[in-house]
Image (cartoon, rainbow, N blue to C red; front, side, top):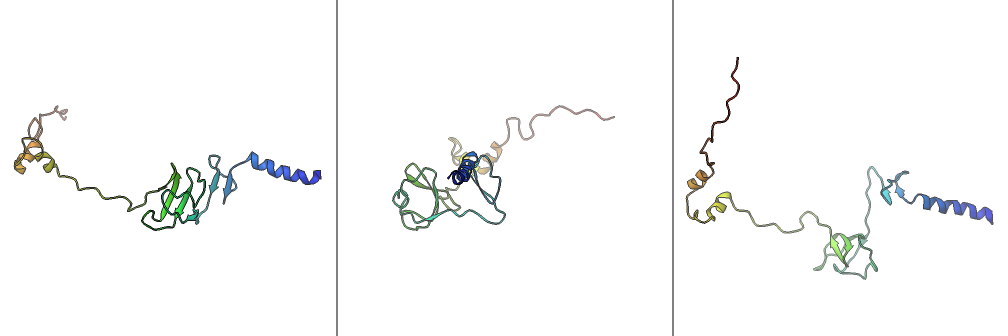
Length: 147
């Protein structure tokens, strides 16, 4: 009986001594619990048909930071990567998510909104861009004379 328990004990002890798991590597990084290495392959995240952002039935007792790829497309939720946080599924933003903001105003449009500038011509705006020393400013320090 002792001969059978010794190999089992050695295997179990080795798991507790080195808890990182490596896939495609014999030396997983010490900061990672799971280290997946590959030259031409990726990690496939589980595909899950969530029903809504608050769906806690499809995956019961979800742990915060759980990551899935939702496959459902309805008025409540669209396909994409989601993580569980704060009792809801939060979408990881993708290109095209979000709305386009309003166009900004030109400097001239902003300038004409300053009280006293309403209705002034563009030439007044251009002249206002000059510094308080005029077009060229003050003369600077002269350089060294050549020999």
